Image 1 (cartoon, rainbow, N blue to C red):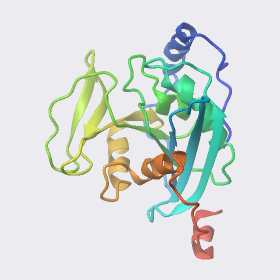
Image 2 (spheres, rainbow, N blue to C red):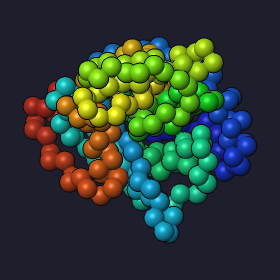
Image 3 (cartoon, one colour):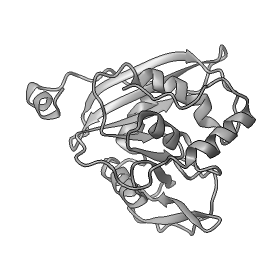
Amino acid sequence: MEAQHLHSWQMTPDQAKTVQREVAVMVCRRNEFEAVRLVAGVDISAPNAEGLAQAAVVVLSYPELAPVERKVVTKEVTFPYVPGLLSFRESPLIIAACEELEATPDLILVDGQGIAHPRRLGLASHLGLLWDRPTIGCAKSRLCGEHKIVPPEPGSYAEITDNGEVIGAVLRTKAGVAPLYISIGHKVDLETAVSWVLRCCCGQRLPEPTRLAHLAASGHLEAPKPINTQAQMRLGI
């Protein structure tokens, strides 16, 4: 899965903020996908003392949510840590992992923000544009905006608003645990994004694609077993 070249990765934080404002207008906030047979999750580890991090992508079949493919790459993180500029720090590594995939996912869940971002271009939206694929932001914490208290029942959610604009939803995926912050990445609307996160949660707080990607990035996920021939024929791989 190759990424488009929208801009250089060699820039200052101020230049990166300008790129975010310019590119954010390209994000598609409506559904532009149909059948989902393969859903992927992406995540990245924290850099080690040498500045190296592991980026992982895990592809699952849908609706079984059975692992189909996993790729992990180790590369140097070159962009500084700046709040709101996570995509410039993490995207090059995630893209490198996804370039090794044989399967092409129909939908990608990203451990990060989509448009729930001060400049409306978080990691999920940035990656969605680079791949021109439907993406959903599934963050563990809020970056910006305000919301009401979310009821305790799984499936409950409240809209996140910023300057009068709805930018995401804080979603209770499991009783007794902290909610997730869901937002449009690219080529999906908010209601559909919430629905797909719930479909992929499997009784856990995190959706299965990003949960497994997190484990893979941290080196705690075994390689998936080959899927059977019948499943391969159905998935076209």
